[in-house]
Length: 411
Image 1 (spheres, rainbow, N blue to C red):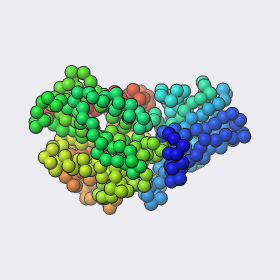
Image 2 (cartoon, rainbow, N blue to C red):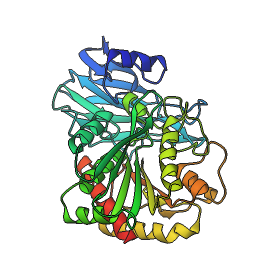
Image 3 (cartoon, rainbow, N blue to C red):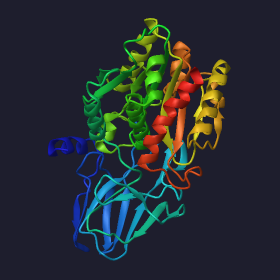
Image 4 (cartoon, one colour):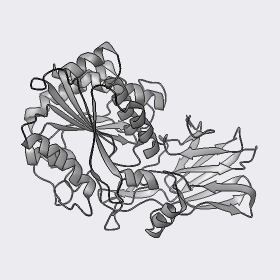
């Protein structure tokens, strides 16, 4: 991340400068000057006690404050027990105040190399104080901490570079973000077999920048689909996969939460058309609708998300897609670590179109083109089937299982 980029971002008020040294903690620094880094104001109370006043992020109207992301590095950490308080955690979700994105069920992760992540053993949370306290004894003087394991634009670029030129892969740029970053689309299939009879699956990842688990699943999905695995080979022969790996590269870059550079939630506003303030939605919608309007079929569309504690598959308003949704859900439960807390969800407010500016992608695709679109929430909290909090390896493996479950439900 260059100094020019950081200066521009900070001028918008969306990234706080938290690289600082405190007289109370000589030789210790807190840094967020890297891609995805963000925190808020930090104060060293003592040499071993750090208070982080969380910045959070709001939408275009200054509402729906979310505190779902932090990612920073400590240099010169003491070799004694370190106490970190994360404060000002209370937020608002869908105009309902009192929401907490950081809870007792979501202990932070830490890393000593910025690549391998471990969940903290203990984090005490207080709703009264709207805070979480982390106590740990660092094994090294440099460590990174984050809400969940980060996945940046650099991670995606590395993936794309590693698969470039692979048989069965077509790479396209369908548009640009507010700040001019590419919005890629991958088409994966066996080009040597007629496309006419193939099933068509669309997968969308990372509508919200904090939901990094979605991107790890997406990477696992792409790597499996392009692998030499016999099942992957058969899937390519029978299916076309359209993969949208990222929807908010600007938010990923600055360490955002769920709003684009203009403050618009990219999983709302699907009833709006504004290619200037919401080019990310415009690009995805145009790609999907152009496919359908030119005779392309869509047998299953899925947007994958992360939630703190909920895990479920949500379907479109029409009951005609319930059988398909239930079939995919059953296959996921049977063959993967998917551990739904709510099962198959049909939200009551999806009976009729939502209020202007509140239509999500499932509703938008259904109401505009009657597409069988679904949304999956995958929790970042403790997973009973795993017997632990999910790791990066678990997410990558789930990507493989997700593809197989969808394919098995369509054949």
